[in-house]
Amino acid sequence: MRGVTALVSPTDGELRWASGGLGRVLVARMGPGVELLRGLTELVEREGLRYAVILGGAASLRQVRLRNVRVTPETWPIRDTHRVFVDLPGPLELLSISGNVSRRPDGSIHLHAHVVVSTGGQQPGLAYGGHLVEGAVVLSTAEIAVAEITGIALSRRMDGETRTLELFPERA
Image (cartoon, rainbow, N blue to C red; front, side, top):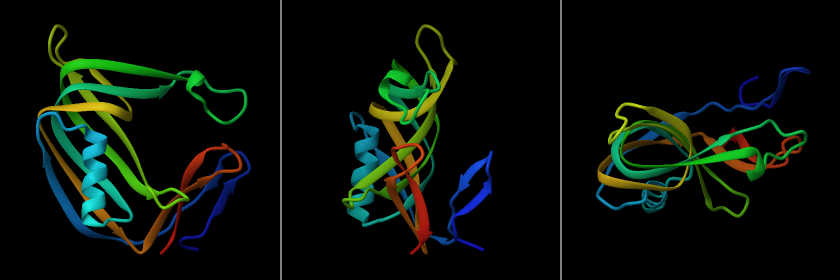
């Protein structure tokens, strides 16, 4: 059945999905000094998008902050003690960005993005990737494409297993 939560197998865990389409595509240029997550959030709010996917982008960055899981926790949820935060000074190139825009239980935007960046400076060409957290600041330009999702509601709700806000795609 399309759009219904299904258990893949007892060992593989749960699979949630919904099918829909794409609506408007937004392409934005962010100038020097814009914080990337705030800029994306403002774009989504101003354009009235409820749900969206980040299609991609390219940018030069002054700095970036990434988050990755460092160790697998004994029990859920994953906490900051299980994570590593990496602060990278620029100049950096944003090689890729992907993610989605969903809504928290209070209706506020939840922007979930992962990026790959490469270094300039002393060690050019090293690549780093991870979950984008606040602190990515545009150096000269950021060009980002976002597509509105239609026919699907993306909510972030407490997951009983992971004990954190997880994505729940449903028919709109």
